[in-house]
Image (cartoon, rainbow, N blue to C red; front, side):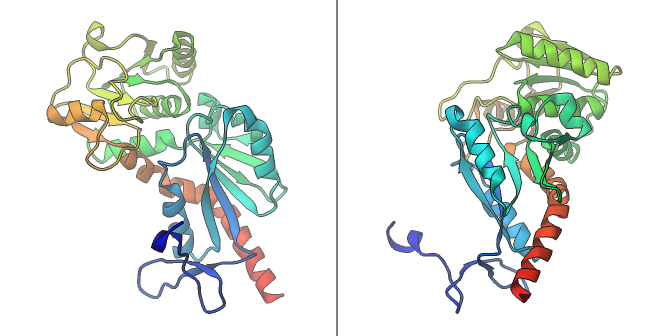
Length: 307
């Protein structure tokens, strides 16, 4: 490392600190008693969660940090078991492509995680076991509601993996009248459609191809990984998009470099929910989910410091 990029702030005791702006806030020292959280995925270079959640922990006076954990698919099980075996690791966030693959590592699942068969957050319980929940749908729906009501709309969703399944369930629960699911794996799309139709009979759910063959959608969502790389095409043909449409894309892109779907939506004057919007929408819910573990970790830290 060269220059300022390799410099870590320290306090007078030589402990690394986390800078948090705001009145009456001081840098939180990273010490031996600091509790750990991690976000696992591949890739993780694009994630913003480490800074966002570490700052949130510091503002709430929890001595905890969240770190990125790059986990390769061929060593997934052993890596996750190793992480979960760490005595000072209290929680995990999960990003693509592992939201479904993490399910067996949770001893308990929330109802929505059970429905979609995926998790994006896990917390350690006092007995050492792990509980899992899924917040992608919560985040997307919360962000979308701030723009326009969803009830009665007809939605087209690309990508039926963990995030897509959660968003699909969130849309159905929030009252969309129709939902078309599109995925390269047609069997996966049909399986999800069947499961959602069973839980949300008021919503017409079907697996389809999307695009001009199925007109009439006024909500279009990309929940696939298409768009992560520069030059990626559309995730599929979305059909007509105009100013009456609400378009969402879970992919996190740098400012000024939208995905192809978001670029088309903006050009058409449509209202847009970005990946950043979705993650902001679920942040408070995830912090609430982590709250019991954070409280226990803070209590443990204070006891160690007092001793």
